[in-house]
Length: 343
Ligand code: AFP
Image (cartoon, rainbow, N blue to C red; front, side, top):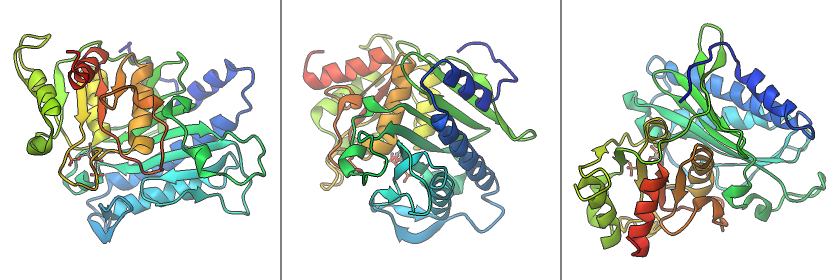
């Protein structure tokens, strides 16, 4: 990580990137700026979570059959309501909503598609553990702005994302994003007194190999032999470090991913047999795996489903789940090799 450069706001940073692209119209800048406003609103609400009646579950389950927290719904509503009127989106896809979210007829439409997990790790809300918002942005494939958006335009492989990133609501609120193509991964910390995200982590690069492994080992008995072998590799002594990796697992993907991005290491959520209805693991390809895969790739790391790059998978449905191995390139390649039998 490079030295801190206090004073550059996220808006200045996005505008400077926009100026480097002569074809940029400002549409994308508007989109990101509004998303940042939404995240500031969510951050404010998360920070006062214990003070008002917003903790806990609503009593409902979402499309993933998971308990919905009140803050989940709040975050989803803030993003949808702020983003639908800006005129740059043709639709949205949210972890909390079963179908595509259409832009209401009274608002203009644009060329971009926003997919997001409004509050990832929300089962941690009540216990003050870091949670986050994950997002990926695509361009629609049909250039006719009047044409109805087809689901197939949304189901693009992650490699087609034009930007991706996340916000962490933790000890401070942080935004990490990339627009790909060698522009780098940059982190901005929210300074509450000025209400601005300021550049705090310029050009983040993940170490080639880490010392941390992150996985929910409570699922051990539900893993197949190859998956067990991967975890045994990292916690054993017959690995590249010749000693066990350190175990770190928060249970909030954003928090686990961010730590490993800065320090190096591997996060795994393998396929398991816990729920026969979810044989491909728990995490969602479009709203969790793809955005983080783009970030880690741009930072020099790698994300795999155990067989190949996450970013090359063509989604077959909006809420598709996928096994995820993500982090330092060499560590993820080891996991891939153990699955394919090459290592
Ligand atoms: P919640 O949003 O329901 O808390 O799920 C969080 C999550 O999708 C991801 O953020 C974590 O990495 C993962 O699930 C944790 O899952 P386990 O509790 O099964 O380890």
